[in-house]
Each structure stands twice: as structure tokens, then as C-alpha cells.
Image (tube, rainbow over all chains, first blue to last red; front, side, top):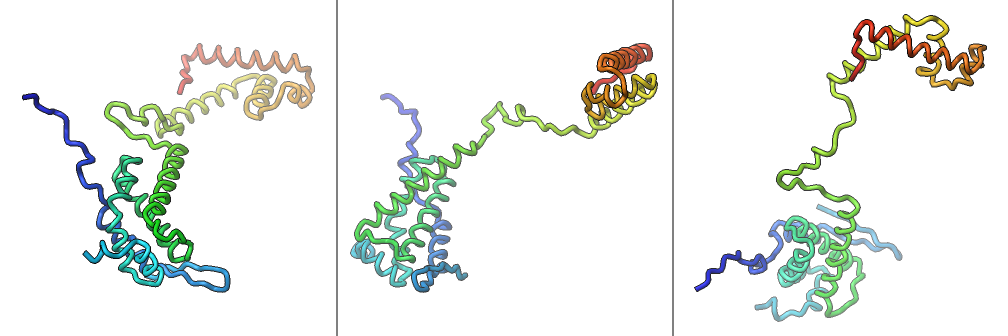
Length: 47
Length: 194
């Protein structure tokens, strides 16, 4: 029987972002607040 | 189980109302599709992470600013943001190509530092000093023309006006100045190279 020498495709692996990246995004979301004043909107990053 | 029951639209609206955990569910639900999409374009883990992060920062800012109005189309919206960021990334890298050393070829073997190193600086100073001493040995009229031409960057017209001689005379003095300097250099085996 013929052997298959090709490597496993990278697409077989689950492509997901790192936990740190997701954690950063969630923390950014918690820290960001948008303040509306009249028709203007201000962003504030509160850590 | 709970995650699958709640629609994206409901999660988005509860996130806009202040429920941070909704965003976490949305990210966990779609992270694989969004990340795979980005990676399929950039083929680099780190860049894909950066683009993924930037995409969600945009998503968060737009949601919190109340700019999102595509009810029920959350994933296509995020995908479009990610797609635009991938395009931005390629625009940036085309403008500033990144050179990566692959094996034998190194870009630094082609590029060189135009500034002189310490040794070459010393040699250059010595050569300039030798030339200055040779000029001092020239007859006064030749020396005057040579200094004006080479060190003061004057034209032969300006030299002739300043010294009160014709342009031809000034040219002749320059010529003899150079001939005399070459003679002295040959006679004394002076090496003037850098």
C-alpha cells in the first residue's frame, strides 16, 4: 500500500486566538466607557 | 447549552445595555471562524492575533458608541471589519516592506553604513593634513587660486575678479598648482588614498 508522505494540513488544527488576546479584549471592553454629552460622544478608558 | 439558545442579536443588545458577559459569549461563539478567516489571509499567527484584537476593539467601540444597527447580522459585520483590517495590514506592509533573512541571503550584506569607521576617519584626516601641507609648499599665486577654487568653491570668473588676473591666467595657475603637487607627491612617494 502506498505511503502518504505529505504532512498533515495545518487546517486540521483548530485555529483559535490565544486566551491572552481574548482576555485583553474583554478587559478593554470593561475599561471602555462612552460618555455622551449633547451630540458628542467621549471615550474614556478606566483601568 | 445556554450560549446556543441566545441569539447574537439578543446578546448584542444586552451587551449594549451593559452586560459584559454577553460579549464574552459572542467572542467564544465566533472566535474560531473569525480567527481562521484572518489567518487564511495573513498566514502569520502573530499578525492574525493582532488583527483579531483590533477587529474586536473596533467592534466594542462601535457597539458602545451606538453605531451598530445591523440586527441579526453580527458575524458578517465582524467579518467585514476583520476583512478591512486585513486590507489595511497589507497596504501598510506594501508601503513598508519587511525584509526577512532567509538562509544565505542577508539584506545587510547589500546595505552598507555610509558613515566612516574610526580607522577610515583617522586616515581621511591624515590625507587631508598631507594635502594641506603640500598646498603650503606651492608658490603664492598658485596656492591662492587653488585655495579659492577647492576650499572656497569659487568659480574661475570669481577668482579672476578677486585676484585681478584674467580667467585664463587663473586656469593656468590652477593647472600648474596641480602639476606641482603631483610632482612633489611622486618625488616623495606620498600615498594619498583612503
